[in-house]
Image (cartoon, rainbow, N blue to C red; front, side):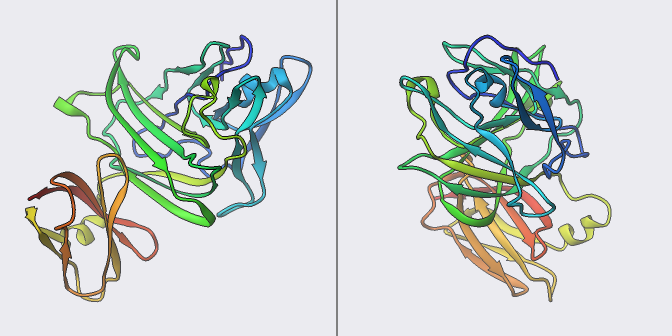
Length: 304
């Protein structure tokens, strides 16, 4: 992948991408490669991904490393924010887009080709030890017009510390107007802030593993999806979820910032869900089986 070097990247801001209903490459972070740095040094990077190591290699310091602490398989990716120089901190970042490394503020460039139907959501596993009030985040963008137009942008914040491997999931904002994207980009950072402004917290550490995109159920899965009903929609105060008898699953209600605001076990043929405490507006829902298969996703309108 093309590397762009200037001097130290001041902020870790980048993106990544995936293709249609095949998954992004190396989503389990099992494959790594050793790259040559700018000062006759070397560093490791997950194959088919770029990282903030490209920008901090000039300092011979690396925020992204291979870890044997994995959710599955042999490896995961570990990211840790460190003090670069002065007030500048270097976020740990992984991305499948190109990194741009600039002293006055780094960034992102493009994404991988993507011209198919958009996925509904992102799932994966993480561990996180934030410092102070820091939070990691992920962002997903659909791009067109030679990267000039952003058709959809979703940001998800990792605000909860997790000392053991914890599943995360968040819905993607739909592309409006039926437009067709050209590229899809995805990105993870272990700190929320701009390192050049000193906003990232030194020592915040995140592990990521087994990331994947979820699409509308198709084929055989439609049988399970069609047996699940969510009604009434819009919902005023409460709604019902019906599911095939004997199916054990969980319902997650997620707001448009990616925060899960409701989680309910579905152990009966019909479950009543109270949403009287939620702010009126549009939400996403997911029905997830015990093996973490997403059985159904959809939009839910909550009215006062």
